[in-house]
Image (cartoon, rainbow, N blue to C red; front, side, top):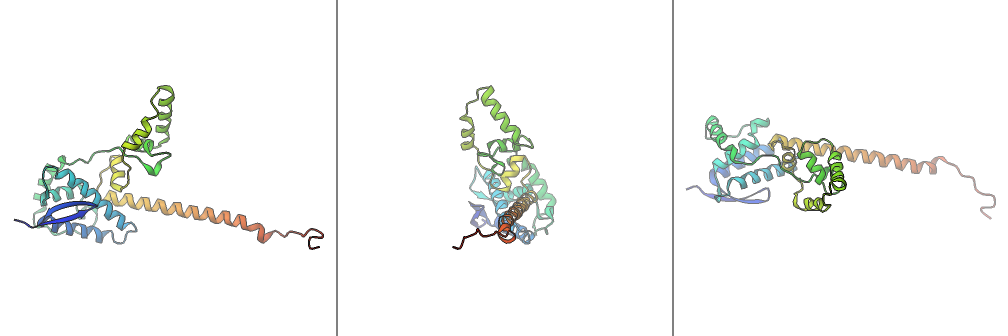
Length: 236
């Protein structure tokens, strides 16, 4: 009988057997080494672990221990290291056999589109922007206009919006944001999403710094370039 280990993956506790534990460590170490030079390395790894934990939770509803087969199925969904340009991890089993076995079981894991609140594009609570992402509408403004029209023309109760605000979860991780758009939460997509968010944040900060610098120069300019005459008798 294999040893078992208690692990924490993405904030979720799991019991995992020795074979799966060893391969999981090699898998995560390979991912960590591959993204080590990325500015968002820590966030990428965290989001990958959270997504793997979600998949494990779907797999072990009727049992208590994650085994190697469960891990193989999750890796097939997330992506093998060689799929995103990293070095392949050592594997005792032939890859063709493993891929064939996991492909048959892949349909048992939920990977479809999900409805979230998109707080990155929110005006109030992110409900309309989340619905826009879910239905593939590029500009959330159209969904907001539909909400207004539904309220005034169709008598839709205004309490529906705050109810959805409470019920719908916020898209916090890269995996959530991918699922909201119906895109596969693979390692490649998670890394791409995190890096794009960091680039957007960096651009926003740079723009704010430029605006602040311009305003500061405008405010300071009169003190350096305008000479003001003293009123007659000012000193007397």
